[in-house]
Length: 307
View 1 (cartoon, rainbow, N blue to C red):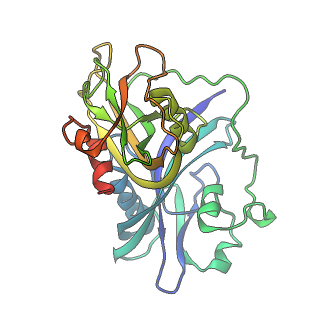
View 2 (cartoon, one colour; view 1 turned 120 degrees about the horizontal axis):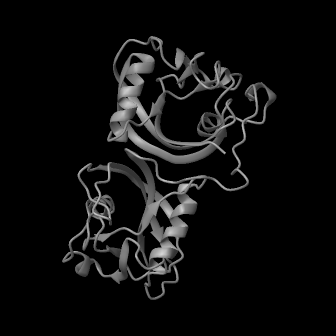
């Protein structure tokens, strides 16, 4: 099975009278004539916050600013060439700051339009767009031409690491227990950030949602079970000079969604993943103890978000 993986950012932009800005796919796109939220793929090394601003200008002619983070989604889509694409989608709320509405020139969209709820409900929409905008996708008027399968493919999937730059999507937890302790993991020697204390979490597998990946990683790295209580933010890290465990440079661009997680019944924090992984140890720590430790940039950012 031929598979593809990409990360993308999209924006919900509403006018003062409640209309939403949507774009129509051009003949250069996989599903011509289907409507979507403005947005597109995150370039290697690009901050997702910058992606949405760039994509809005390219597709609509409008300058926007991010006003909020709405959701992080993932889906599998069977493309017309019969390959399966996993897309991680970051959904922002944005507001217009300038520019004039116009269609994209020679791109994957050909119309940008403000649409009211009744108009949106009659357009053929990409599945994720229908979900974000609260439109029933099982309405026959919203079906796409051709088969689109968003279930996980059966059979083995080849996810070997390709040569060259790699874009990785991950899910991480700022996990706390009823006593107010914080769950952190220490990065093992030989990995970028070795010795620093990090949020438990890691890369999402092909076909895996961020929430499912987070539950798996939380158990593998700390032996805990938790529940997500909120989406804290999205960040990225790009360090093409970083060295992997074999001492080989990794041109990896890591995009990370991080969540607030509550562990209602904490147990002793123990690393359960196989030896040789990136996690050296896990521990429940008081805020005072955390303040004395070397923390990763992601840990510091998550702690700032929660005060």
